[in-house]
Each structure stands twice: as structure tokens, then as C-alpha cells.
Image (cartoon, rainbow, N blue to C red; front, side, top):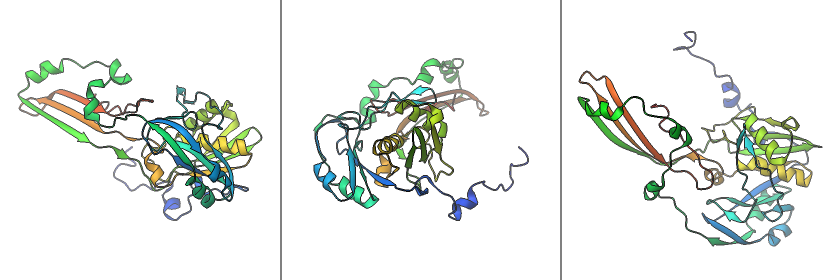
Length: 314
């Protein structure tokens, strides 16, 4: 370790990235490529009562419009052995604002984008909740915290400490919006799938696709030589690789799907809002005797996520 600490170190992919030689997921050249564009919900919670794709299907260059009415049923999905839920284009339920309700595939990106604007949807909206403070009484411990126990007796140590400090910190939602947008290209050769994807975990995407599509992982190759920023937004498989692979298999030709910049705000996870209460006890020499750290953060109602905010304090 002393060989590297305090010394200049060349970043392995640095030169390729700053000189434009790095090839990202959406930049691979594939013949006979079709282009996908997502249509997103405009309500935060509810149901799709009606979705009209007729005008979009008549638009120039459109190959097919996928909705929950004609998309194949996916398998249960998994990520490195952990179950995940596939919900995109699988039912009329709207679980969050910006959820995909249709995927338009056309001969060009411009044709797919234009046709996506012609898709019309009618919703039955339901109440949604986004105020963390208003639902703190419904908070549940995450699985990690539920299994852990305090070390020693922090409250007793705090009561006897000569110096006590207590503070509350509020951090808002922080969106992962890196320079490289999330993207995938799916290519089928018989029963073999090659997927170019922006991901920080190729094995996780491979396992997720295998479980979702009813395949063996050995039939799938996931390629991600460079990642143009992610900050955790590409750790778990997102919905777009599966939709891209599905469309390519149904149409029997390669398909590319790239998020727009605005879709980057709803197309994957984000760092949750947190309210953290930290209490420290110390002697007059400054030696810590007690640390109490409580944290609350938001998560979805259909797929729980724990940010493990107190993990490092423990």
C-alpha cells in the first residue's frame, strides 16, 4: 500500500476517456439496428384505464409499440441470487411518476421519439405520498438494523458523559445523473443474447436477464467496457436492459434504447432523503464514550430499499 499512498497513480481508463477513445454502451455499431423510445406515465400512482397507440403505429418508420397489453410476461427476476420484481409493461398499475407505459420501436431514433409523443393514455389516479415527515410513524427497521443490537449501553454512557452533543441533519434526495445516459443494445443470434449495457455489475445484469427471460446465464453475454459515471445508479439492474432484450427478441432484430436526459431522473434509483439524529458523549479530554445514530429515509411502497445510513457509524 505504501507504494501508492501519496504518489501519482495513472487511472487505467483515464486516457481513453478524456481523448474520446472509450466506447460506451450506446456507441457500439450493430447492423440492421432498430431504435426504441419510452413513453412515461404522467401520474404518480394509479392505473392505466386506456392507452391508444393507433396514431403512433401509423407514424412513419414505426415497427411496433409495446404496452402492458402485448408485452410477454417476464419471469420473477433475480439479482445475484436476490429476487427482484419486474413491473415495466407487465400490468396496468402505475407505481411511480415517470414509469414506462409504452416502448415505441422504429427504424430511426427520430421516428421513435416522434411516434412516442402520439401515444395517448387515460389514467385513474390514486393518492400518492412523498412527504417523509408525514409518514415517519409508519417507519420500519431495515433488515440489517433489525438484526443488530447496540454495543454496550449507549444511553447509560451518554448520561454519565461530561460532554454531550446532539444534532439533527436533513439531506434531500440526490439524483444520479452522470454524463453518460443509461443505454442498452440487444443483439440475438439464435438463443444467444449479447447486451451492451451501462452497468457497474455485468454479472448482476446477466443473472437478472436469465431469470426474467427464462434462460441460462451461459446464453447471455453482457458487455460494459466503460462506464461514464454512475454513482451507484447502475449497481442494480434497471428496467431498460430487459425491455431492450425483449423487444429485440420479439422483432428478431437488434434494438437500441437510450434514456433522454429528463428520463434519467426517473429511470433508475436515487439517493434517498434522510433525516439523521446524532448524539455524542465524551469525557472532558475529548474521548468518545457514547454514539447514538438514528436515521430515517424514504423508500418505495412496492420495492423496499435500505440505504444502510447507520452502517458506517456502527
